[in-house]
Picture (cartoon, rainbow, N blue to C red):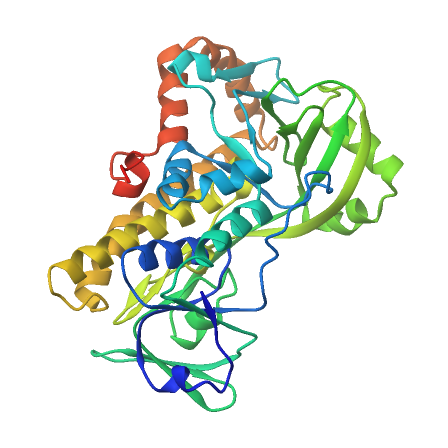
Length: 418
């Protein structure tokens, strides 16, 4: 990988195959997959990614629950070993229960003959492992701290103008710059939003009892609470609260915060005995009205954000990346303009529907478990014990969550031979 200077002639003196704005998990994975297929890629990122890792370091606040499909994508990109060498944890079960009804549902990997139901991994670990591979790619360049001032697309190419009057030309511009995407905004792509009126408090804690390699989720009057298994007695938390409680939760001293977390989890893992740094953010569903324009494509959070209660955000983004890589490579190998609208529309049609299904599914769970109507409470009281006994339904749900739907990209279907 080559680091470019802002005034480098390489910026204006050539037509790049691919320019990716954003080097987070999804943007970096997209860059890596395309570079491994022979494309000349330029990444615009805020600053260098730290690849060093200290196993004794404090757990990071942001984590993801990677599915088997995401695991296969990362293995096919040569990234998984770097993740394992840093830090990840396989969870083998999930346990879901409700504050006001006695029913509980337990999901176990053994029931579907799988070694686990996924891996809990810190986002910083995933990003570092991908960048570690990017550094070995001769056809990848990176430009740090560049500020975008305009985006133009035509039937031939895309132009990305940077502050300082530098114009970067590319056959395909990929926006991977997050939920508040500047590229999406400058490209005049509309956004449909829904405010959940909830926030998520995240961080890592140590509990009195072991998590038993299980992810625990309890639905309360304020919203879901989850322990995501990390290591020994360490769990990542996701505590969902009304927006007006975010400042309160973040202002608590460690001892009070630990007690509130213990209470929210119904003391399922005993007392919380240690807390680390924590953060909070409001929850908003976003969905771009279009994923593509001629020579422009959105991936990951730039295209969609969902309620994070099932940890599916990065999994959807990695599927976006794999699908876009597949369609772009397929077009290039057929001698077609891989940045053309007709090619990119195939990617959009492939991914938009699946992303919306997952978005709505998360909202359906959120609606069902809200304790705002006696009829819903009565329904849950009846259905949760029944659901726990319906093995075929539970097994189907686990398989869908772990392995994904049938319309998976090749990178997510199986580990390809080298």
